[in-house]
Amino acid sequence: MIYTNPTHHNPTGLTLPVRARRELLEVAARYRVPIVEDDTYRELSLGAPAPPSLFKLDESHRVVIRVNSFSKMLAPGLRLGWISAVRPIVEQLALIKQQVDPHTPNLSQLVVAELIERGVFDRHVASLKIEHRRRRDAMVHALRQHVPAASLRFGIPDGGMYLWCQLPPHVRAAAVRDHARRESVELVTGEPFYVDQGGTHQLRICFTSEPTARAEKAARTLARSLAAAASDASSPARLV
Image (cartoon, rainbow, N blue to C red; front, side):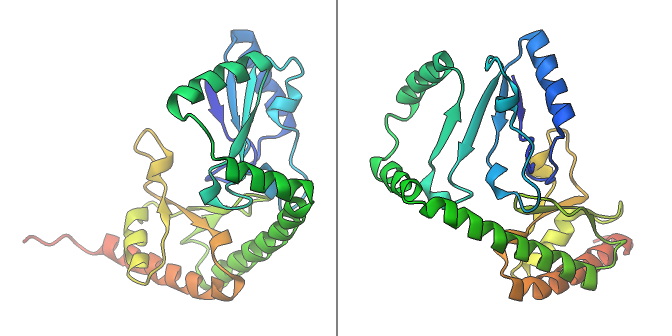
């Protein structure tokens, strides 16, 4: 099985081009390997519309199982999502779900259905994207203003919720995180996103969680944390 998050990927923010999507589908079909497409961030595009999903490009609908969620668009506590796949797969997954989780709460489903039917959901997502774009731009501007470019490299994602940042080789992400925590700023290091002990010099910054008015303060804190972590790395080890 191939699990992939091809649209506004978490944590990198990258989006797989259409050509690469078609090539992936061809390889999966050739070797009869199913693809689980995590499309959670599709509706959070901040620029041009996202490319067609793998599920849509898979015209036979024999390879891709597409999953999505309302958690990123409405509220994490809803824990409500959906699956797109051919009927036999959906029916089999429904049987499995009944063994693990007998029933999704009716109230959550009814509330979301009402929001969709009345058009509230679409209006909410439209306003959410505007606010996310403002927060992304504010955070990027603040980081560029207060953090030296050599200390923190990142791309500007065209959707999603995160900045994926690369640190200098001598600065460890865990040290930066620890210093930032002392000033009540939380960062996510790169290690949880790897299976091979990678990510020690990478950070994920969630720009959507910070209002634009707090972006500068967050950037200043990160600048101090980076400087402190770099100083720690250059200090000679002391014997105790």
